Amino acid sequence: DAGVIQSPRHEVTEMGQEVTLRCKPISGHDYLFWYRQTMMRGLELLIYFNNNVPIDDSGMPEDRFSAKMPNASFSTLKIQPSEPRDSAVYFCASARGDNSPLHFGNGTRLTVT
Amino acid sequence: GDSVTQMEGPVTLSEEAFLTINCTYTATGYPSLFWYVQYPGEGLQLLLKATKADDKGSNKGFEATYRKETTSFHLEKGSVQVSDSAVYFCALRPRSGGSNYKLTFGKGTLLTVNP
Image (cartoon, rainbow over all chains, first blue to last red; front, top):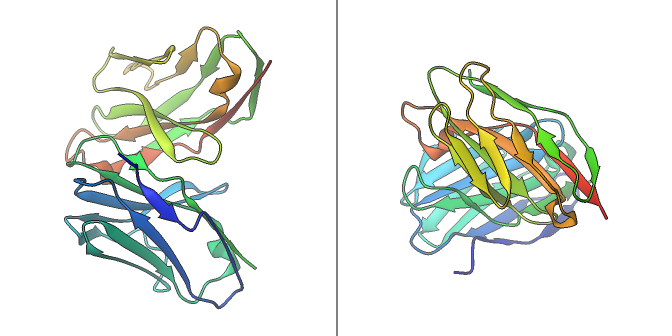
């Protein structure tokens, strides 16, 4: 079991650029979650999927953010255009079933200058 | 809405010291309670959990008891090690419709253990 795999580990970009974060969940897990972690706001749920279908995106901060899950083994979180206030660590997590523990990836540290 | 309040860090201890990290919550009914740990450069991992009042969760020498009367779930360890240095998150999940997506996390407490 390789765990949840996120890429890249670090991303530095300039304001206005498009940023794409990637996640490969654990095989067999049917839930996938995107979280954002900042010092000020802590850990926030952005969006989650069940069987590749977005279920709740109410945590997505604004239209600049979008997420997709084209298949059971891959998801992306895109920010276009990026802004300095988007700087944070973005985590992907997966779970098998609705009430099982979350398994987190190691995160992507995004810095927007 | 639901909320979790943790003691602010950072907490710095010497090896073999006693650890307490306070956590209180506000929620409707009787939620499930969790402690997650985040080691440097890694994602969060479930450390322990308790699903009903007076339950004690335990793992790796850590313990926490679900106290309904004080709405608390304090994390304790009798003798910390350098390898326990990490950020600790308290979290709750509501009883009704308790899906993972309804997890509410505290802001985290950074623990540093010195040799």
